[in-house]
Each structure stands twice: as structure tokens, then as C-alpha cells.
Image (tube, rainbow, N blue to C red; front, top):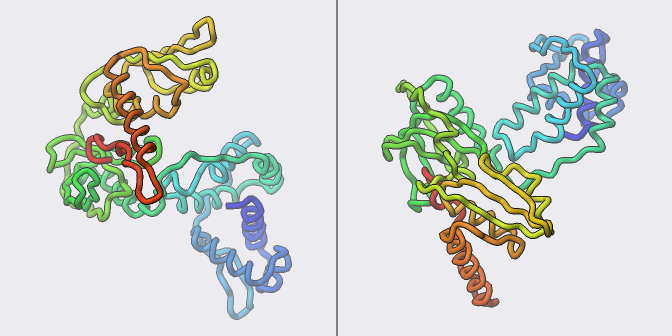
Length: 343
């Protein structure tokens, strides 16, 4: 939500809480907005759980008895952090419950002093956040809520799942254990009764979710770090490799600045090149990452990883050499095709 709209809504709430009697024209005049904007804002406040009552006998508006959060006492840095999260870092696609979070943010902001809001608003206007490409999770908000309920109640769910791996829909009985955001999307880690094992499922591919009344006992020893193990991202393949790469000086600093993996170790060579070492379960994920650096990286170890990268490079070259206007290039390997649970 844009800063000026938030300020406008907070101004409207302040007027409604003032105890003065306003008809529609008076409220619009005091808020310095048109009637159409006023009614649109009143509707938005209602959707956020802030009821505005209309007294037909007096033709006036007032704030209803809907519960608002009690006053909060934040210093400027705390308020700035809160507003940065709600106005900048909370992207619509990143969290399925974006609308609910925005409604909550409006309620919290309504309790902040106007001077503090104005000060923070000026700072926030100079800040932007550009998210990398992510799945549009908001469309799965109902699914997310159902899974949250099942997780909290420790009950099973029946899921109709669009399985890319099997190229068909699957009806699954799952014991949900963890909702997790990885890289670009939200996933559910669950015990699948059909597979008799733990699997990972992308929530955007869940076509329907039915929360059952069947209880289950979550395994006490479940730990997501152990589940993903030493995978580069989230696809362990069952074999661990000691990876050693050399990045040229041109990209060395940008690679060195990022925490890519818990096991990574880096050091520089005299010419400025970066040696990158990590202990990784599986080669497919890290090979795709290596390919993104093109000619600026060389695989030193293991030979198996070098072979995977070379194979991908040959396929990429063949796809582009064989491309013409009448046809399409050979499709590249599907990312995540080997993910447990068809992510």
C-alpha cells in the first residue's frame, strides 16, 4: 500500500475516533478527499476489521466497537522497522496471507502518533525493495490457512495434488509437519501415506485440501535441517561430494559476500580469483547454480560435477544451435525435477 494512502486512512481513523459528529460531506472535507474516495476508504477499513457505524437518525459516522489493538509504545527505529516490513519487504507474492498481514499492519499503524508516522514515512519513501522472481502465493491463501490449521491441531489432510513428476493429479493423505519458504515458493513437508515416507509438496500445486479429524503424532525427532541435510538448496540425492570451484576475479567478490551454504569455505588466490569449497549432497542443484556464472567459474572437484556441468553446457549449446524460427529449442532440464515430493 502506498504511503499516501496509509496516511489518508490513519487520518480518517483519527477523525472517527475524535468524538465529533461528521456526515459524509464533513468527513470528506476534513480528510481532504472526495466522497467516492471516502466510501472506498470506509470499505477498506471495514475489510481490515475496523467498523465505521452510520447513525441514520443523525446522518453521522463514528468508529464502531470492533476491537483495535491497544496503544503501543515504539521508538522511531522500532516504528521504522515495522513500517519497512509492512510497506516494503512484505511483497504480495511472497506470503499467501499478504492481505491479512496488511490488515493487521493498518490496525497497528492506527495507534502510532502522527508525528512518528510522518517521520518514518519520509524515510520509507526513499527505500525500495526489488524481490527476485517468486511464485504468486496469494492465490493459495485458503490452502495455506487449511494447512496451518492442520499443523496446529496435528490432524491429517487429504490433498488433491497436481504432480508434475507423474503428469497427473494425485489424491494423497498427508501428515503435515512443516510449512517452509525456500528460494521462490512455499512448500509443505509432510509424511505421505501413499509414498510411505517424508515428502515435500509445493502448496501452489495443491488443487484442494480437506482437513480431516484424524489425529496423528508428529515424530519427535523430525528436524528440517536433517531432512534437507547437505543439499545445496532442498534436494538431497543421497551422495555427498566435496565441491571445489574457482571463480575469476571479476565475480569473486560478489560470490564471496553471500552465504550460499552452511559448509562453504572461501579463500583468495594471489591473482584475485576465489576458491570456493563446500560439502554438498547431490550435484543437480549446485550444477545449475554454477551454470549461472557461465565462463566465470571452473569446476576443480569432483570430476562427477564437472561432467554434469559439461553435459548441461552441451545440451544448452545444442539447443541454441538447433534453434530456428520454425521450431522451439530443446527444453532444458526441469529445475527441481528430482525433488522428493515433486516440488
